[in-house]
Amino acid sequence: MDWIIGGTKDSRDFIKKLSEDKKIDLKNIVLTTASDYGKKLAEESGVIVKSQSMNKEQMKLFISEYSIKRIFDLSHPYAIEVSSNAMNVAEESGKKYFRFERENLNYENSVDFIEIEEMIKFLENLDGNILITLGSNNIEKFRGVKNIENMYFRILPVKDSIEKLEKVEIKAKNIIGLQGPFSKEFNKAIYKNYNIKYVVTKESGVTGGELEKIEAAYETNVIPIVLKRPEIKYKWVTNDMNKIIEEFKRG
Image (cartoon, rainbow, N blue to C red):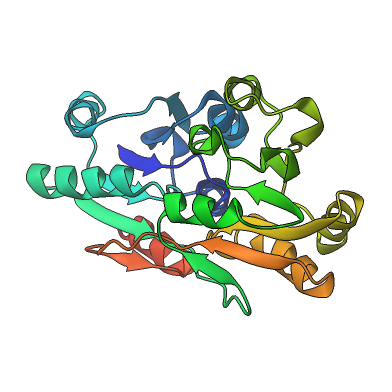
């Protein structure tokens, strides 16, 4: 079988394109997601879908259990541990590894950070309202931030994410529970409604509404604060979806 590491819109787009080729048997593909939410989004794709986070040893067992011959990594750009483990496991087990990496946007007039801890220290000294769009994985790092009242967290409206915010004592009025992607005009409406002066975002790339978020910021004089994408050296990587599809079809 072929293993797609997914849970992203990229992985769903990948499977959709594969399904257009009737020679490809989707039943020979297993897709893994890190969350139940990602699993639900992918369940109608026609492939086997499993929701489980795996360390390196668990990946080895997974490869054995499903007789994996190739790994197609379409995980999130910030899931570097997943990608690193997958590459290492592929090399150790003699499996082929292919990585799709989203193309970066060119941010203008942004304030950039490599480490989230440094970013949060910077945010604490800002005046004005701040929109946080980093997802829920780093919520704990905002515990005790002195200007938390001025921060609005836009997250998926799912139980796990809401609970993480509640544990950090984020008030309901500071939670914007919405599922994207969002249009430029919708982002502009949110910025204006909450009087946002800064938007905090990951360098996620063109997929999932990132461009619309940044364009809306420029048009409303909102300053982007960017958590830069972690660097990792892939053994095989492309930002062209057609190229990774070609590799898949080669068998």
